[in-house]
Each structure stands twice: as C-alpha cells, then as structure tokens.
Length: 110
Length: 115
Image 1 (spheres, one colour):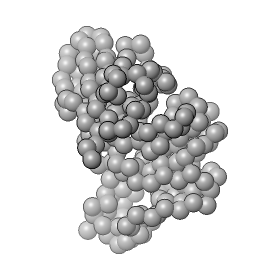
Image 2 (image 1 turned 180 degrees about the vertical axis):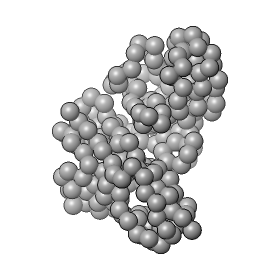
Image 3 (image 1 turned 30 degrees about the horizontal axis):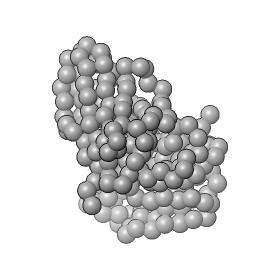
C-alpha cells in the first residue's frame, strides 16, 4: 500500500539551530515529491518540487533533497518566522494524484 | 496573478443540513482538487475535477459530491451533515499535462463547523 510518513512529528529548535525534517515514502509510480508549509488556519503554501533521486532545491534557509526512498528538508539557521507545519506529498501516475504525509510541526524559539 | 479563492471562509451548520463550498482556481488551471483536513487525519483527498469531469475520488461517502463548471470553478457539496464533518476544506488548483499534475496551489480553505 502506498504510504507517506514524516518524522519527527514535532520539532522544537532554538533560533539559529539547524536541523532536518524527513519524509519517507513507499509509492509505486512516483512522479514527483512536493514540500509545503502550512500556517495555522491557512492553506498549504507550495515550497518545492523534486522529480528524481539526487535532485536538490533551495529557497532562503530551506533546502530539499530527494533519494529513492525519502526526502529531507534541511533548515539552516532557522528564525521564529519559520515556525509552521511542513507537509510533504507524493504525486503518483495513477489514482489519487497527491498523497500527503501527516506533517512535521516546527517551532523555532527566539 | 490571483491565487485560489475559496468561499465562504467560515461556516456553521447544524447536523442534517447540507452545505455548498465554492472554489475559483488560478487562471489557466483546469484541474481542481478538494481535500478535508482534520487534526486527527491530516489532509485527506476528496476528489479531483478536470474539464468538468471527476477524474479521481478518495474514500469518502456519497454524501460528499462535487462539480466543475466550464470556467473551471468548482463546488463541493456535503449533504446530511454529521458532527465528524467539521474540518478545514481545502481546494487546490494545478495545471494538468496529460495524466499528470504540476504542483498544486491551495486556497485559504473553508472552516466548516457542524453543531
């Protein structure tokens, strides 16, 4: 069965303390992996798309990487405004197009 | 460029009533998907519409339905509301290239509370 898991469930960092979030997937026919950021009460905001193993994308303090089984979202020197829930989703080439993971709730303390 | 617009933002309904939510996608996007988000279940896929046709459907009862109009705007309807239908309903639009979608862009959601 296709599955997307994320770890940790919640993460607390001090401002400037770098870390990584993990997204593991077991999906046949993967067409892409997406990262989103979601603030409370709002819709998810698109961050990155990764299509093939070895691919990397960067945006400000965020860097996403992809292997054949998982993706990492690296956060370098985070700031309090980076606090949010980070969601990953896989895009399959059949059936339900996007399957979302449960998310990692990130808190960055000043 | 305008984003995805969902209306209304908030709704309070009584058990047994029905509700209709609206979504206007990004201009040029013809694929619209609907999701239900709850604290316990996360983001759950409801259905996807493309060119006024339902292309994919998630595991929700028949009380949940939708449609898409010729201008790509979409509506979803929930009949005979239950307390468990209280959730944030999100609409996402994307470009479709053949059978594949590009990244999805989400609206702000409609917060439905069933009392």
